[in-house]
Image 1 (cartoon, rainbow, N blue to C red):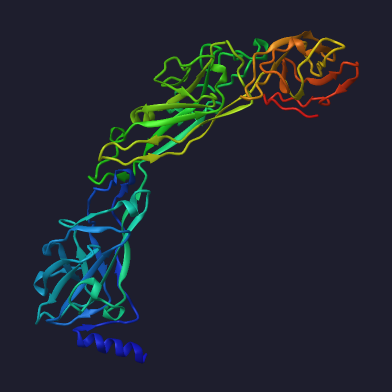
Image 2: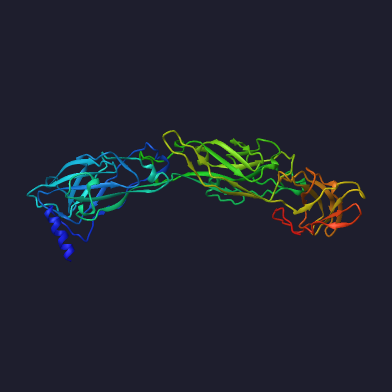
Length: 493
């Protein structure tokens, strides 16, 4: 209690009657949220109106100084005019009761201070409210606080000590300075990715997708084509999914306009998975139609064909929405058990209008096969004639429920890609088994390798056998019989 009375007494000697236990407040943020991508290094914005409510009274004839400071590295480019500063008592601005003497930018430019005098004979200013209008004041260097979505606060307080903010101490303030948010930012641009395997008529293509993609790699076509004509009108093109940009309706540019697609630079976009089955270049595209009939953009493929990269994709096209399409020419096997994904777009800056930004991607189509598949990890190609070299065989058992042609393909042990499949056991009946010499299996490289055995039946089992020159038979991999109708190339010993 003695401390509070002493504080009031000290304030009174400066021309104030202070309530030391309280502090002023800054009015609640009521402005528009700025689009973060538009805040470049040279962007300036008008200072929003700052309302500072106090709990102290100022005596007749007293001159005092209100300091306004900004957070996040924001600096004052242009200070308010004296006519932009208003003092209200009980909600009424009576200009005859006060004089705004001057507005001065602090030496560090992170704020300004205003000299105000309570006109003598008017009864002083009781718990005044200060309004600092944004008519003239301009703020700059906004990127550190707002470029990725953030806030800027203003802190206001008043003192009887004249001069720059740098000369003030904690004891200088009549009451504890108050802080409040005056600027907010949020991303204008966002990216959504939808798998073609799940239809969403509301957002997926704005209702353009009338059905889901159901294609699988057709084991009956030796893995070189898809099995049905879903979405596209052929068995050589697969719709992987949809990518679309959205412009936030709740943010504005520094010029108080709505963000537009034309304000953004072009994007680089990647689709990952396995495009080995294309057979030739130019078949991985972005299309404006769900049936992939036309190519708006054509990808370049990485050396291992695991990544397709699209460049110079316009924001306007992405706001409309594009389908990622995987085309094949039927000349090579199409890998399956593959999860495709559409990456986050890298959006370039558009001159001095917008800054570069990176979006967030997501999973697209998961490609399966339409039959059983067994991965055989242990496989040694035949090294010579019977009795002189090592000979290898595959014992294949149709443990499924359909008669099927059984195919085998060898993996390239260096590249990790599956080769061309060959039928090694035609029309194998349910429950039947056959022993196949591995000379019937095309192998891309000598030495140890792995095999993928497939068939249009529900289940398969495969037992790799090795016969040495003396005729001794060795089971080199157990029975590989874990099959997956989901399309994964998996196995177990």
